[in-house]
Length: 452
Image (cartoon, rainbow, N blue to C red; front, side, top):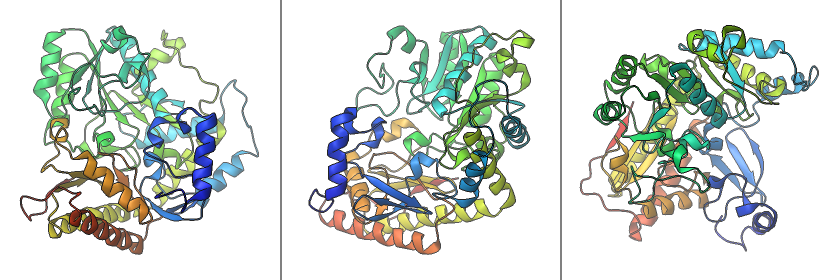
């Protein structure tokens, strides 16, 4: 949104929001400058309050997988309203159907607890891990995001100079809670091994995104996930894969089915419901029994809306669609690769220093660096260039979250024309900003990037 005079309705809604909602938004990362005020969405596009259309690469942080308002999903949700709405006692058949489907679909899962958000799923996963191991410490990596719960609310996208130290994402978190979570480096087994050696028999779990998509796309190096699996098993520690982003977006069985690595616990959500609030934590019965009182478990899991009919209907419909359309991933993967290769060509030809990374139907642009293997590489990122480019794309009708390091997504509603139009807009943006000196100049004309 480039100006008040050009977007009077959007600006008016934004002004009203700031009067009655702290900060004007209900989730902090939705505001970067004046956010868009969105009024409609369908397929691959969203429409703001002033009638402007945007090709939606943001996809609600990846929750939109099939496309906005997909008829298969929306029809299933509408049909769910003909039965039980919300009782809050006992169990419905749709909850059982979804748990059965997840057990057949995700390699690590025998049992599932359904919740509503990825943050809840992670909070319960950590609780289960601590109960199962009778240990208290957690390891996460710098840059990894696992929701808002206090146990993991640290060292996400850290301000320069605060990386790897005490860096909570919010005020109001007890220091002793932060101290129970240790920080390692992605793609660096030695950094994780050192923490085990410094805290013997105290690590309950290591939690990672199998691709840290919170900071774009830091792809795992050969042997890293396998080494992590071996290390955690040797030390009696649970390995948790946070597949809230990677799950269903990259494969029906999650990224674990691609990597061939089976974690002890898996969290998932976002794309599973194609825009409807849904999430869960699952694993083998030997671990999940911690939440089963009949088997001596005493982990408490509660939630009025857990496993509600709308969430279950949306999830069943989304997964069912993916099962019935095996070419879905071929298509989104091809579009993702076209975006990555096209962007690399554009930055080479405009002499812009940038690394393009991604997997499947995702892509990320890192300005000012030549590789992105770990968070240390990202510390030299040109954030000002990132913001300028992303804002330029929004002004050209393409919605990319205007935050440095963030990934972008292709949904099932995209067409070849959408992709080629996006690359044309990217070229115009890059040429304009490069000419104005707002993008870093390349040291070499060779395209760079990481892709799995």
